[in-house]
Image (cartoon, rainbow, N blue to C red; front, side, top):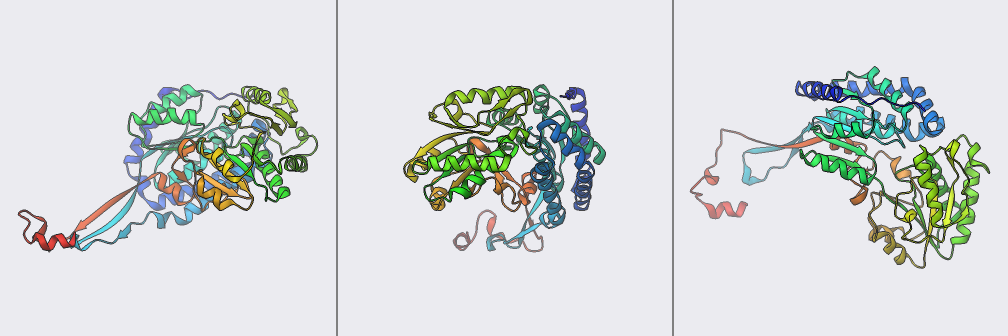
Length: 459
Protein backbone atom coordinates (compact mmCIF):
# COMPACT_ATOMS: atom_id res chain seq x y z
CA UNK A 1 0.00 0.00 0.00
CA UNK A 2 1.25 3.46 -0.84
CA UNK A 3 2.06 5.89 1.95
CA UNK A 4 1.46 9.60 2.26
CA UNK A 5 4.23 11.96 3.30
CA UNK A 6 3.82 14.19 6.32
CA UNK A 7 3.29 17.83 5.50
CA UNK A 8 5.99 19.78 7.30
CA UNK A 9 5.25 22.19 10.10
CA UNK A 10 6.70 25.01 7.99
CA UNK A 11 4.21 24.32 5.20
CA UNK A 12 1.31 24.15 7.64
CA UNK A 13 2.26 27.52 9.13
CA UNK A 14 2.67 29.00 5.66
CA UNK A 15 -0.79 27.80 4.59
CA UNK A 16 -2.31 29.08 7.81
CA UNK A 17 -0.79 32.55 7.24
CA UNK A 18 -1.94 32.65 3.62
CA UNK A 19 -5.49 31.72 4.54
CA UNK A 20 -5.66 34.20 7.38
CA UNK A 21 -4.55 36.97 5.04
CA UNK A 22 -6.97 35.89 2.32
CA UNK A 23 -9.93 35.73 4.70
CA UNK A 24 -9.17 39.11 6.20
CA UNK A 25 -9.09 40.53 2.69
CA UNK A 26 -12.85 39.95 2.52
CA UNK A 27 -13.12 37.98 -0.74
CA UNK A 28 -15.22 35.22 0.83
CA UNK A 29 -17.82 37.66 2.17
CA UNK A 30 -19.35 37.99 -1.29
CA UNK A 31 -22.16 35.47 -1.73
CA UNK A 32 -21.64 35.30 -5.49
CA UNK A 33 -18.03 34.30 -4.83
CA UNK A 34 -19.25 31.47 -2.62
CA UNK A 35 -21.69 30.24 -5.26
CA UNK A 36 -18.92 30.27 -7.83
CA UNK A 37 -16.70 28.19 -5.57
CA UNK A 38 -19.48 25.69 -4.85
CA UNK A 39 -19.97 25.19 -8.57
CA UNK A 40 -16.22 24.81 -8.99
CA UNK A 41 -16.28 22.10 -6.32
CA UNK A 42 -19.08 20.30 -8.17
CA UNK A 43 -17.07 20.38 -11.40
CA UNK A 44 -14.01 19.14 -9.54
CA UNK A 45 -15.90 16.20 -8.05
CA UNK A 46 -17.25 15.19 -11.43
CA UNK A 47 -13.82 15.51 -13.03
CA UNK A 48 -12.08 13.44 -10.34
CA UNK A 49 -14.92 11.03 -9.62
CA UNK A 50 -13.33 8.03 -11.33
CA UNK A 51 -9.94 8.62 -9.73
CA UNK A 52 -11.58 8.83 -6.30
CA UNK A 53 -13.76 5.75 -6.73
CA UNK A 54 -10.82 3.79 -8.12
CA UNK A 55 -8.80 4.80 -5.06
CA UNK A 56 -11.64 3.69 -2.77
CA UNK A 57 -11.50 0.29 -4.45
CA UNK A 58 -7.73 0.11 -4.01
CA UNK A 59 -7.72 1.11 -0.35
CA UNK A 60 -10.94 -0.47 0.90
CA UNK A 61 -12.25 -2.80 -1.85
CA UNK A 62 -15.28 -0.50 -2.02
CA UNK A 63 -17.26 -1.08 -5.19
CA UNK A 64 -18.07 1.80 -7.53
CA UNK A 65 -21.77 1.46 -6.73
CA UNK A 66 -21.25 1.67 -2.98
CA UNK A 67 -18.67 4.43 -3.36
CA UNK A 68 -21.02 6.53 -5.46
CA UNK A 69 -24.04 5.88 -3.22
CA UNK A 70 -22.35 6.49 0.14
CA UNK A 71 -19.72 9.07 -0.80
CA UNK A 72 -20.02 10.88 -4.14
CA UNK A 73 -23.80 11.27 -4.40
CA UNK A 74 -24.21 12.56 -0.84
CA UNK A 75 -21.64 15.31 -1.40
CA UNK A 76 -23.01 16.29 -4.81
CA UNK A 77 -26.51 16.63 -3.36
CA UNK A 78 -25.13 18.84 -0.60
CA UNK A 79 -23.21 21.02 -3.07
CA UNK A 80 -26.28 21.55 -5.26
CA UNK A 81 -28.44 22.37 -2.27
CA UNK A 82 -26.01 24.97 -0.92
CA UNK A 83 -25.46 26.57 -4.32
CA UNK A 84 -29.23 26.93 -4.67
CA UNK A 85 -29.99 28.32 -1.22
CA UNK A 86 -26.89 30.10 0.09
CA UNK A 87 -28.15 33.47 -1.17
CA UNK A 88 -31.28 33.15 0.96
CA UNK A 89 -29.43 31.74 3.98
CA UNK A 90 -26.94 34.62 3.96
CA UNK A 91 -29.58 37.38 3.88
CA UNK A 92 -30.15 39.39 7.07
CA UNK A 93 -33.07 38.18 9.17
CA UNK A 94 -35.25 41.03 10.33
CA UNK A 95 -36.68 40.51 13.81
CA UNK A 96 -39.45 42.25 15.79
CA UNK A 97 -38.34 45.03 18.11
CA UNK A 98 -40.27 45.61 21.37
CA UNK A 99 -41.90 48.98 22.00
CA UNK A 100 -39.49 49.72 24.85
CA UNK A 101 -36.70 50.03 22.24
CA UNK A 102 -38.48 52.50 19.94
CA UNK A 103 -37.26 53.80 17.49
CA UNK A 104 -34.81 50.93 16.95
CA UNK A 105 -34.90 48.10 14.39
CA UNK A 106 -33.40 44.62 14.86
CA UNK A 107 -31.80 42.12 12.52
CA UNK A 108 -29.47 39.14 12.57
CA UNK A 109 -26.63 38.92 10.07
CA UNK A 110 -24.55 35.85 9.36
CA UNK A 111 -20.81 36.16 9.20
CA UNK A 112 -18.22 33.46 8.48
CA UNK A 113 -16.25 32.27 11.48
CA UNK A 114 -12.97 32.49 9.55
CA UNK A 115 -10.38 29.81 8.85
CA UNK A 116 -11.60 26.28 9.55
CA UNK A 117 -9.72 23.04 10.11
CA UNK A 118 -11.55 19.93 8.89
CA UNK A 119 -10.18 16.55 9.99
CA UNK A 120 -11.73 13.39 8.54
CA UNK A 121 -11.43 9.65 9.23
CA UNK A 122 -10.68 6.78 6.84
CA UNK A 123 -14.01 4.94 6.72
CA UNK A 124 -15.84 7.37 4.40
CA UNK A 125 -12.79 9.40 3.49
CA UNK A 126 -14.32 11.44 0.69
CA UNK A 127 -17.76 12.17 2.09
CA UNK A 128 -16.63 13.00 5.62
CA UNK A 129 -13.93 15.40 4.39
CA UNK A 130 -15.70 17.17 1.53
CA UNK A 131 -19.23 17.39 2.96
CA UNK A 132 -18.10 19.71 5.78
CA UNK A 133 -16.12 21.69 3.20
CA UNK A 134 -19.41 22.50 1.45
CA UNK A 135 -20.62 24.20 4.62
CA UNK A 136 -17.34 26.07 5.01
CA UNK A 137 -17.54 27.41 1.46
CA UNK A 138 -21.19 28.43 1.65
CA UNK A 139 -20.68 30.18 4.98
CA UNK A 140 -17.69 32.12 3.61
CA UNK A 141 -14.82 30.44 5.46
CA UNK A 142 -11.45 29.29 4.24
CA UNK A 143 -10.51 25.70 5.02
CA UNK A 144 -7.56 23.42 5.66
CA UNK A 145 -8.41 19.77 5.02
CA UNK A 146 -6.71 16.84 6.73
CA UNK A 147 -7.60 13.37 5.33
CA UNK A 148 -6.63 10.05 6.89
CA UNK A 149 -3.26 8.41 6.15
CA UNK A 150 -4.90 4.97 6.44
CA UNK A 151 -6.41 5.33 2.96
CA UNK A 152 -3.41 6.83 1.13
CA UNK A 153 -4.67 6.43 -2.42
CA UNK A 154 -7.95 8.17 -1.60
CA UNK A 155 -6.13 10.91 0.29
CA UNK A 156 -3.82 11.56 -2.64
CA UNK A 157 -6.70 11.59 -5.14
CA UNK A 158 -8.55 14.14 -3.00
CA UNK A 159 -5.39 16.22 -2.74
CA UNK A 160 -5.11 16.31 -6.53
CA UNK A 161 -8.76 17.33 -6.82
CA UNK A 162 -8.42 20.11 -4.25
CA UNK A 163 -5.21 21.49 -5.77
CA UNK A 164 -6.77 21.37 -9.24
CA UNK A 165 -9.88 23.22 -8.04
CA UNK A 166 -8.80 25.81 -5.46
CA UNK A 167 -5.91 28.09 -4.57
CA UNK A 168 -4.33 27.03 -1.29
CA UNK A 169 -4.89 30.48 0.20
CA UNK A 170 -8.60 29.55 0.07
CA UNK A 171 -8.84 25.74 0.40
CA UNK A 172 -5.75 23.66 1.11
CA UNK A 173 -5.00 20.07 2.02
CA UNK A 174 -2.30 18.68 4.29
CA UNK A 175 -1.31 15.06 4.75
CA UNK A 176 0.19 12.88 7.42
CA UNK A 177 -0.07 10.97 10.66
CA UNK A 178 -0.94 11.94 14.21
CA UNK A 179 2.17 14.12 14.47
CA UNK A 180 0.68 16.29 11.73
CA UNK A 181 -2.64 16.25 13.57
CA UNK A 182 -0.89 17.57 16.67
CA UNK A 183 0.84 20.30 14.70
CA UNK A 184 -2.52 21.34 13.28
CA UNK A 185 -4.20 21.31 16.68
CA UNK A 186 -1.42 23.47 18.09
CA UNK A 187 -2.48 26.28 15.73
CA UNK A 188 -5.26 28.73 16.40
CA UNK A 189 -8.34 28.17 14.22
CA UNK A 190 -11.72 29.81 14.06
CA UNK A 191 -13.46 26.42 13.96
CA UNK A 192 -12.36 22.80 14.16
CA UNK A 193 -14.61 20.26 12.49
CA UNK A 194 -13.56 16.76 13.53
CA UNK A 195 -14.99 13.37 12.62
CA UNK A 196 -13.56 10.37 14.43
CA UNK A 197 -13.61 8.43 17.67
CA UNK A 198 -14.72 9.80 21.06
CA UNK A 199 -11.18 9.23 22.37
CA UNK A 200 -9.67 11.50 19.71
CA UNK A 201 -12.62 13.88 20.00
CA UNK A 202 -11.64 14.57 23.60
CA UNK A 203 -8.09 15.42 22.50
CA UNK A 204 -9.43 17.79 19.84
CA UNK A 205 -11.68 19.50 22.34
CA UNK A 206 -8.84 19.83 24.84
CA UNK A 207 -6.61 21.44 22.21
CA UNK A 208 -9.40 23.75 21.06
CA UNK A 209 -10.11 24.89 24.62
CA UNK A 210 -6.70 26.58 24.84
CA UNK A 211 -7.88 29.16 22.31
CA UNK A 212 -11.61 28.94 23.06
CA UNK A 213 -12.05 27.61 19.53
CA UNK A 214 -15.52 26.27 18.74
CA UNK A 215 -15.69 22.64 17.66
CA UNK A 216 -18.01 20.40 15.74
CA UNK A 217 -17.42 16.81 16.87
CA UNK A 218 -18.92 13.97 14.86
CA UNK A 219 -17.94 10.91 16.87
CA UNK A 220 -19.40 7.44 17.24
CA UNK A 221 -20.17 4.86 19.88
CA UNK A 222 -22.24 1.73 20.15
CA UNK A 223 -25.43 2.14 18.16
CA UNK A 224 -28.04 -0.36 19.37
CA UNK A 225 -30.31 -2.26 17.03
CA UNK A 226 -33.48 -3.35 18.84
CA UNK A 227 -35.71 -6.02 17.30
CA UNK A 228 -39.00 -6.37 19.13
CA UNK A 229 -41.34 -9.36 19.26
CA UNK A 230 -43.80 -7.70 16.88
CA UNK A 231 -41.26 -6.76 14.19
CA UNK A 232 -41.44 -7.97 10.61
CA UNK A 233 -38.46 -10.29 10.96
CA UNK A 234 -37.74 -10.75 7.27
CA UNK A 235 -37.71 -7.03 6.52
CA UNK A 236 -35.80 -6.29 9.73
CA UNK A 237 -33.14 -8.90 8.95
CA UNK A 238 -32.70 -7.63 5.40
CA UNK A 239 -32.31 -3.99 6.40
CA UNK A 240 -30.06 -4.80 9.34
CA UNK A 241 -27.84 -7.08 7.25
CA UNK A 242 -27.55 -4.32 4.66
CA UNK A 243 -26.70 -1.70 7.30
CA UNK A 244 -23.97 -3.92 8.76
CA UNK A 245 -22.63 -4.95 5.33
CA UNK A 246 -22.06 -1.37 4.17
CA UNK A 247 -18.33 -0.70 4.39
CA UNK A 248 -18.05 -4.04 6.25
CA UNK A 249 -19.53 -2.42 9.34
CA UNK A 250 -16.86 0.28 9.36
CA UNK A 251 -19.49 2.99 9.60
CA UNK A 252 -19.98 5.39 12.50
CA UNK A 253 -23.75 4.80 12.35
CA UNK A 254 -23.58 1.06 11.66
CA UNK A 255 -25.85 -1.03 13.89
CA UNK A 256 -23.29 -2.05 16.49
CA UNK A 257 -25.03 -4.73 18.54
CA UNK A 258 -28.32 -6.62 18.42
CA UNK A 259 -30.83 -6.30 21.25
CA UNK A 260 -33.40 -9.01 20.50
CA UNK A 261 -36.66 -9.92 22.18
CA UNK A 262 -35.98 -13.37 23.59
CA UNK A 263 -39.08 -14.86 21.94
CA UNK A 264 -37.83 -14.16 18.40
CA UNK A 265 -34.09 -14.52 18.88
CA UNK A 266 -33.49 -17.88 17.17
CA UNK A 267 -35.90 -17.21 14.32
CA UNK A 268 -34.43 -13.77 13.69
CA UNK A 269 -30.80 -14.95 13.69
CA UNK A 270 -31.68 -17.67 11.16
CA UNK A 271 -33.30 -15.02 8.95
CA UNK A 272 -30.35 -12.68 9.41
CA UNK A 273 -27.92 -15.33 8.19
CA UNK A 274 -30.16 -15.91 5.19
CA UNK A 275 -30.23 -12.19 4.36
CA UNK A 276 -26.45 -11.82 4.62
CA UNK A 277 -26.15 -14.63 2.09
CA UNK A 278 -28.73 -12.98 -0.15
CA UNK A 279 -26.74 -9.74 -0.16
CA UNK A 280 -23.19 -11.11 -0.38
CA UNK A 281 -23.49 -14.71 -1.57
CA UNK A 282 -22.36 -17.87 0.18
CA UNK A 283 -18.75 -16.67 -0.02
CA UNK A 284 -18.71 -12.94 0.78
CA UNK A 285 -14.97 -12.82 0.15
CA UNK A 286 -15.72 -13.23 -3.55
CA UNK A 287 -18.32 -10.46 -3.55
CA UNK A 288 -17.26 -7.28 -5.30
CA UNK A 289 -19.52 -5.36 -2.91
CA UNK A 290 -17.97 -6.39 0.39
CA UNK A 291 -15.36 -3.99 1.75
CA UNK A 292 -12.13 -5.08 3.45
CA UNK A 293 -10.90 -4.16 6.91
CA UNK A 294 -8.77 -1.04 6.66
CA UNK A 295 -5.49 -2.37 8.10
CA UNK A 296 -3.94 -5.25 10.06
CA UNK A 297 -4.26 -3.56 13.45
CA UNK A 298 -8.02 -3.18 12.97
CA UNK A 299 -8.22 -6.79 11.76
CA UNK A 300 -6.44 -8.05 14.89
CA UNK A 301 -8.76 -6.01 17.11
CA UNK A 302 -11.81 -7.58 15.48
CA UNK A 303 -10.34 -11.05 15.72
CA UNK A 304 -9.85 -10.62 19.46
CA UNK A 305 -13.57 -9.89 19.87
CA UNK A 306 -14.38 -13.43 18.75
CA UNK A 307 -13.17 -14.63 22.15
CA UNK A 308 -16.05 -12.79 23.82
CA UNK A 309 -18.84 -15.15 22.73
CA UNK A 310 -19.97 -18.16 20.74
CA UNK A 311 -20.00 -17.79 16.95
CA UNK A 312 -23.53 -18.43 15.68
CA UNK A 313 -22.52 -17.98 12.05
CA UNK A 314 -19.66 -16.34 10.19
CA UNK A 315 -16.22 -16.06 11.71
CA UNK A 316 -14.37 -16.84 8.47
CA UNK A 317 -11.45 -14.52 7.88
CA UNK A 318 -8.33 -14.07 5.78
CA UNK A 319 -5.78 -11.64 7.15
CA UNK A 320 -3.73 -11.60 3.96
CA UNK A 321 -6.80 -10.13 2.21
CA UNK A 322 -8.05 -8.30 5.32
CA UNK A 323 -11.34 -10.13 4.78
CA UNK A 324 -13.65 -10.64 7.75
CA UNK A 325 -17.00 -12.35 7.22
CA UNK A 326 -20.25 -11.05 8.74
CA UNK A 327 -20.32 -12.72 12.15
CA UNK A 328 -22.87 -13.09 14.95
CA UNK A 329 -21.74 -13.74 18.53
CA UNK A 330 -24.06 -15.18 21.18
CA UNK A 331 -23.56 -15.76 24.91
CA UNK A 332 -21.83 -12.40 25.23
CA UNK A 333 -21.48 -10.71 28.60
CA UNK A 334 -22.64 -7.07 28.67
CA UNK A 335 -19.25 -6.32 30.24
CA UNK A 336 -17.19 -8.02 27.52
CA UNK A 337 -14.89 -5.82 25.37
CA UNK A 338 -17.07 -6.40 22.31
CA UNK A 339 -19.95 -4.81 24.25
CA UNK A 340 -17.85 -1.92 25.56
CA UNK A 341 -15.91 -0.79 22.48
CA UNK A 342 -17.32 0.54 19.23
CA UNK A 343 -16.87 -2.54 17.04
CA UNK A 344 -16.36 -0.84 13.66
CA UNK A 345 -16.50 -4.11 11.77
CA UNK A 346 -18.87 -6.87 10.65
CA UNK A 347 -19.38 -8.46 14.08
CA UNK A 348 -22.79 -8.54 15.78
CA UNK A 349 -22.85 -9.40 19.50
CA UNK A 350 -26.32 -10.40 20.73
CA UNK A 351 -28.16 -9.33 23.86
CA UNK A 352 -31.77 -10.22 24.69
CA UNK A 353 -34.65 -8.63 26.57
CA UNK A 354 -38.01 -9.79 27.92
CA UNK A 355 -39.93 -6.51 27.67
CA UNK A 356 -39.32 -3.16 26.05
CA UNK A 357 -38.64 -1.42 29.37
CA UNK A 358 -35.67 -3.75 29.88
CA UNK A 359 -34.34 -2.89 26.42
CA UNK A 360 -34.76 0.82 27.06
CA UNK A 361 -32.90 0.55 30.37
CA UNK A 362 -30.07 -1.33 28.68
CA UNK A 363 -29.64 1.53 26.21
CA UNK A 364 -30.14 4.47 28.57
CA UNK A 365 -27.63 3.29 31.16
CA UNK A 366 -24.89 3.38 28.53
CA UNK A 367 -23.35 6.31 26.64
CA UNK A 368 -25.68 8.08 24.23
CA UNK A 369 -25.18 6.52 20.78
CA UNK A 370 -24.76 8.25 17.44
CA UNK A 371 -27.64 6.18 16.07
CA UNK A 372 -30.41 4.03 17.48
CA UNK A 373 -32.41 1.53 15.42
CA UNK A 374 -35.72 0.01 16.44
CA UNK A 375 -37.79 -2.60 14.61
CA UNK A 376 -41.30 -3.19 15.84
CA UNK A 377 -44.47 -1.35 16.78
CA UNK A 378 -43.36 0.53 19.89
CA UNK A 379 -41.08 3.05 18.25
CA UNK A 380 -42.67 6.09 19.90
CA UNK A 381 -42.12 4.60 23.34
CA UNK A 382 -38.47 3.89 22.58
CA UNK A 383 -38.02 7.42 21.21
CA UNK A 384 -39.61 8.95 24.30
CA UNK A 385 -37.33 7.26 26.81
CA UNK A 386 -34.00 7.20 24.96
CA UNK A 387 -31.56 9.71 23.48
CA UNK A 388 -29.41 9.32 20.36
CA UNK A 389 -27.86 11.44 17.65
CA UNK A 390 -30.34 10.06 15.11
CA UNK A 391 -32.85 7.25 14.87
CA UNK A 392 -34.47 5.03 12.28
CA UNK A 393 -37.63 3.09 13.06
CA UNK A 394 -37.87 -0.11 11.03
CA UNK A 395 -34.73 0.80 9.10
CA UNK A 396 -30.99 1.42 9.45
CA UNK A 397 -28.54 4.03 8.14
CA UNK A 398 -31.09 5.95 6.07
CA UNK A 399 -31.30 9.04 8.28
CA UNK A 400 -27.96 10.13 6.83
CA UNK A 401 -29.40 9.94 3.30
CA UNK A 402 -31.87 12.79 3.86
CA UNK A 403 -29.99 16.06 3.63
CA UNK A 404 -33.06 17.87 5.01
CA UNK A 405 -32.59 16.52 8.53
CA UNK A 406 -29.68 17.10 10.94
CA UNK A 407 -26.80 14.66 11.24
CA UNK A 408 -24.83 14.72 14.45
CA UNK A 409 -24.23 13.16 17.81
CA UNK A 410 -25.17 13.87 21.40
CA UNK A 411 -23.11 13.43 24.54
CA UNK A 412 -20.32 10.92 23.99
CA UNK A 413 -21.28 10.56 20.31
CA UNK A 414 -20.63 14.18 19.42
CA UNK A 415 -21.80 17.76 19.52
CA UNK A 416 -23.42 20.03 16.96
CA UNK A 417 -24.90 18.82 13.69
CA UNK A 418 -24.63 19.48 9.97
CA UNK A 419 -26.16 18.86 6.51
CA UNK A 420 -28.26 21.37 4.60
CA UNK A 421 -28.53 24.78 6.29
CA UNK A 422 -27.08 23.34 9.49
CA UNK A 423 -23.75 23.04 7.64
CA UNK A 424 -23.98 26.74 6.81
CA UNK A 425 -24.86 27.43 10.45
CA UNK A 426 -21.93 25.36 11.76
CA UNK A 427 -19.39 27.60 10.03
CA UNK A 428 -21.23 30.87 10.74
CA UNK A 429 -21.64 33.31 13.57
CA UNK A 430 -25.05 34.95 13.87
CA UNK A 431 -24.56 38.56 14.83
CA UNK A 432 -27.29 40.69 16.40
CA UNK A 433 -27.55 44.21 14.99
CA UNK A 434 -29.69 46.91 16.60
CA UNK A 435 -30.01 50.14 14.60
CA UNK A 436 -31.42 53.19 16.34
CA UNK A 437 -32.37 56.40 14.58
CA UNK A 438 -31.13 59.73 15.87
CA UNK A 439 -34.08 62.03 15.12
CA UNK A 440 -36.05 60.72 18.08
CA UNK A 441 -34.31 60.19 21.44
CA UNK A 442 -36.79 59.31 24.18
CA UNK A 443 -35.56 60.33 27.63
CA UNK A 444 -37.00 57.46 29.66
CA UNK A 445 -33.86 55.30 29.73
CA UNK A 446 -31.61 58.08 30.99
CA UNK A 447 -30.95 59.01 34.56
CA UNK A 448 -32.74 60.10 36.71
CA UNK A 449 -35.35 57.77 35.12
CA UNK A 450 -38.33 60.08 35.01
CA UNK A 451 -41.75 58.49 34.57
CA UNK A 452 -40.28 55.14 35.74
CA UNK A 453 -43.74 53.89 36.73
CA UNK A 454 -44.86 54.18 33.11
CA UNK A 455 -41.63 52.70 31.75
CA UNK A 456 -41.90 49.74 34.17
CA UNK A 457 -45.13 48.67 32.48
CA UNK A 458 -43.32 48.45 29.14
CA UNK A 459 -40.49 46.30 30.46
